[in-house]
Image 1 (cartoon, rainbow, N blue to C red):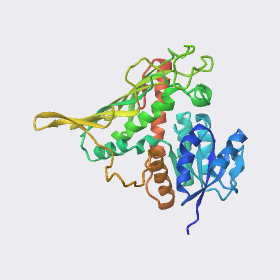
Image 2: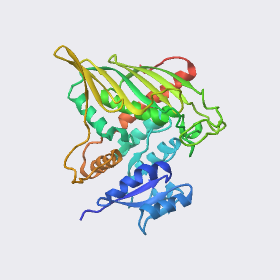
Image 3: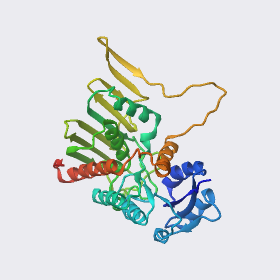
Image 4: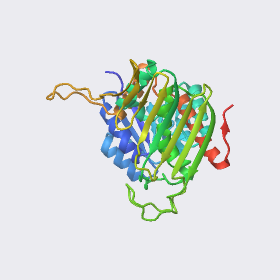
Length: 361
């Protein structure tokens, strides 16, 4: 029996417990959750109780793990401002690293992460799990096959009518680097660039707004927020043009007065056909001198009494990640791709601050 990979979780808060740990717990055939680190010791201890073994370590300082030769893989699930510091340290210590999205708080830090991965030869990926949804995978296949033709225009959607995250440090600009743009806009932009296979931005123009953040006792999915703690934008928008002439519009908000809202979705416009994720996956085009719209059925069907193995998008994400480590198969989310996402997000913030378009040339 092959030796199991020993995995360390750095940050045992919401994203670790809501995403990483439940998915990793399904992969005990290839890995063991060997260490849990959090600045709040009780959180690390609870994660060990829920997901670890008797031998699992509980720590409050990730640096105590750097010299632990038994650790093979590290998942960084901390606030944005510490992604780079922790990831680089573990890459330099000879560990493979999965960092939660975005890659880093700043593009400069993201570039340092990429350089560390290339220098050490250790794998680095970023948690853009929306790529692994059934609709995303199917649409990506269509794009790769050229079914849409040249994709020259797209929209990246990351809109919530009222769903401001009121826990953790989401509202803290110093810790996170921004609000909905860097939190959920990052998913929509990543998905769009991946579909287009276009990572060569030319010019970025951005706007950010803080229009509803001062509302007291506002309707909100997670209860009212404290305006004094709300130090980031509540909405952000960007227009990105690319070296090949393509255009992407990015819209992101935690709180906005729009009737229709959705997040981590994309609309694509190509020379042969278009596609959108508005209430499903739809392809539109022209055949035999007639316009058509086709809804793609994404459920696999089968017999009613058979319950086959099912994976959600995070399960698929983790399978692909560990296959890359164990089998040498390609990463779906590469650090070079994630870096371009961070560079564009930063350019939107910079453009909004300075009132000028940001050129990548």
